[in-house]
Length: 157
Image 1: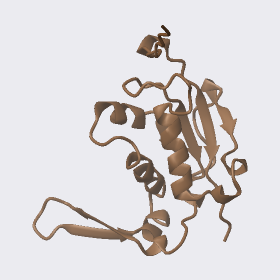
Image 2: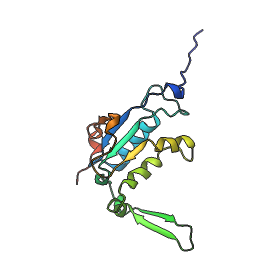
Image 3: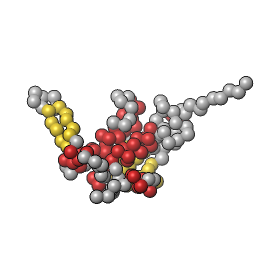
Image 4: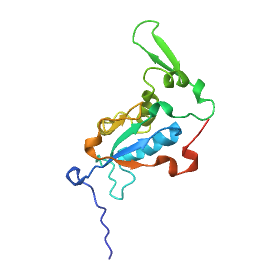
């Protein structure tokens, strides 16, 4: 009789890496899916759903991402909590606004499990910067060439 055991990863056994991704000319949805997969640790053979085994991710040039189709005109609504406090912005306005990195942050956040403490912890390991510099050189991050993985990952206007 053959018995197979599935190895369950424990939090003490996790080895986290630091990676840097350049988001210039990258498609938002494809980049967010790649980041969410790396944050959760699903790229590893030791993936365990209830353990945070993902990497720490640094994204630079988040202001230079591209949207496909007519997504520049997609409207996002939110409510301030006050009467008549419904606000709206298009994705194009968000990208050209004061905090363009929020577009990528929300895209990744929406690809993680909803309302879980583990997803909130995994989001703290994502650092997104609008410019091309970051303050995490001391961690010796590994550079991942996201654009070279597929020709569909890059969109040039």
